[in-house]
Amino acid sequence: MMVALYEKMKRFIRYTQRYVKNGLLHPWPDTKRRMWFLGDWAVPDGVEVSDKSVLLTNNCVLSDCYATMAHIAKSLNKNEECKRFCDLADTLNANITRTFFNVADSTYGTGTPLDMSYPLLLGIVPAQWKEAVTQKLLQRSYTTYKGHIAAGLVGTAVVTHWAEQSGHVQLMYDILKKNSFPGYLYMIRQGATTTWEYWNGFRSHVHNCYNGVGSWFYRALGGICPDESAPGYRHFFVVPQRPTGISWAKARVTTPYGDIETEWHGDKLAVTVPVGTTATISWQGHSYEKEAGRWYFTDD
Image (cartoon, rainbow, N blue to C red; front, side, top):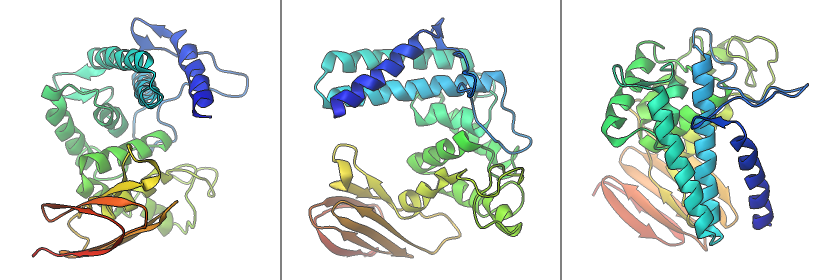
């Protein structure tokens, strides 16, 4: 089954190659019913989604696809194909930086959170500029966007994943606790019981939108992160991130082996490792390898 899916995914990659010009992916034709070459969508008022941003976002998606295909090819022992996808990713990443990176102000694209976080998340940003781009993203998040969410349907999940992967837990916490527009608490203050289609409440008030942020609660606060080399949480990591303003957190992830649970209060952490799994737990500057059981850690 994996081989069959892999071959279907290769068909999509071949399709994209028709529209790669001068080293970058360009828009493919819309159908009668759909326009698929989009950037961020349904962003808050005041966030620019220019043609440059759309082009950058889609090329980041293609880079992400190349990396995924390389991982799959490696797992299938297709070493030549793995190398080909890695080479495609390396070439595209260099073209993305050459085309969209502004050295003068350390921004990518239009400098929106999506335009900045996606290249960081995918490792596109060269090492010598990574810290400057990161600091510019944080600075713009707190000044230009006043600490509010500044992303749409695509950007919310990407920004969330970047924040979790890079350990910028404070930024996400500050964004999530904003109760003015735009934000989740703003929706709640307006009586929402489900997420809206648009941050400003336009159109549907029962829409599966902006939910990419959900992973941040169990992966960042709860610290429960899968190990890509051991699928299904056969092995996993527990690395809780603790922002200023939160004194405790409790999380649970259901796996094929049972529930993984974490709970921390101040400097105390408890972790449940299901039978048949192992965990690498990081807490208070120490690392522990644990098998099945309920484990307790303090700062002692």
